Image 1 (tube, helix red, strand yellow):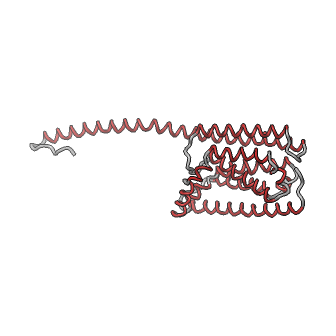
Image 2 (cartoon, rainbow, N blue to C red):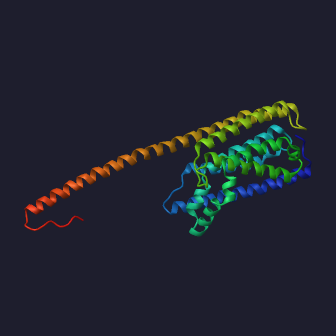
Image 3 (cartoon, rainbow, N blue to C red):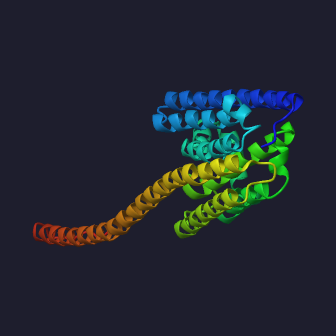
Length: 300
């Protein structure tokens, strides 16, 4: 990629440190929610906390630090930041269940307002699996087939907006496919499976195209190294998403199956209990009649 001048690089550094400050605030708020939840007798799972820390760290590493600086002058480094902020960080952050933690720790009125926002029409639109697919996969094609990829190294604002888009689009997509937080859309497992397969195919095709047709201003070797990272490293991230998705689908199906089995069993037990109760009432009524000369009480 084209090297950025000193002024642009300095501006990008300022933006990066601003993002780092936001990351610290996010982790502080998450930790405060964990403490409140524990004080109320509902300890927060440590695995989710670990996902939150790793997710924020992955996003921060893509914006500030040595790797972020190298991304201004090398396409392979740029692709590493893309994988971190657009794929790794969203998956980890979604698995940390921040919305569930917020609903658990907020007071009644803020929690209700958050629930209304989640059920609103705009939230339903952006969180739909197909919409998330367009934002995530479609955004990558727009990035690499427009002048945006050439403007990122020299324009800090463009760089920030692209990174923000990658993070938000990745969060929407991961939430639509493997999200564990409350959301306005139902499971719809088959639709989510199709969306996941389409995203993987789009990612693979784009990586192969970039390998054969480097973006303008990018050296062939650098472009091919970046495309290989996108294909292979991105494939491992996608494989982990597939694993989580299949595990969630299996557990949901198992729960539904146990519920379908328990319902007839419970109904049969109630019927047996009713029959036994009728027999007991009948025998009790008969013995009571034999032991006295008055009529039995009317059945209740």
